[in-house]
Amino acid sequence: QVQLVESGGGLVQAGGSLRLSCAASGLTFRKYTMGWFRQAPGKEREFVAGISWIGGTTDAADSVKGRFTISRDNAKNTVYLQMNSLKPEDTAVYYCAASPRAGVLRNEYDYWGQGTQVTVSS
Image (cartoon, rainbow, N blue to C red; front, side, top):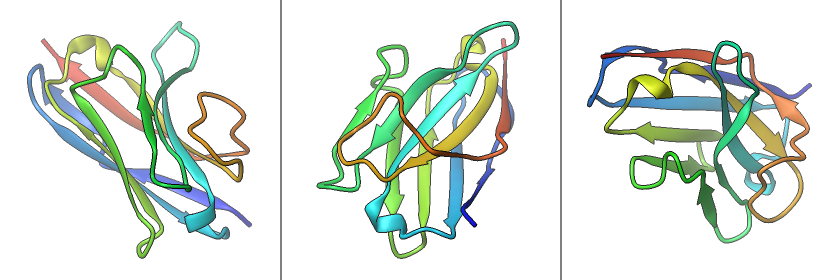
């Protein structure tokens, strides 16, 4: 049974930083592409960043490029999202996702975590 458990969310002032973690179990982590998504109230879920299991290639949404960094530690079965220079518009529930497909994906994820709330105050 695949489980993805996010942690690290919270309340932070604009300009601050947070690091989200997603611990995976029940899958061969090193062979899964991992992604982060977010959903703000009243809005659709959107892609934030992804990291492929082949070559560690990464991709990020234009709205977070230069501020957010995705990384993974295959020894710990964990993917991270380092978020710097946070803005109030980054406020959302952040979800971790996993896919057995190669390449960096902006959709087609099979497994999802429960999410962690990130709130950025102005």
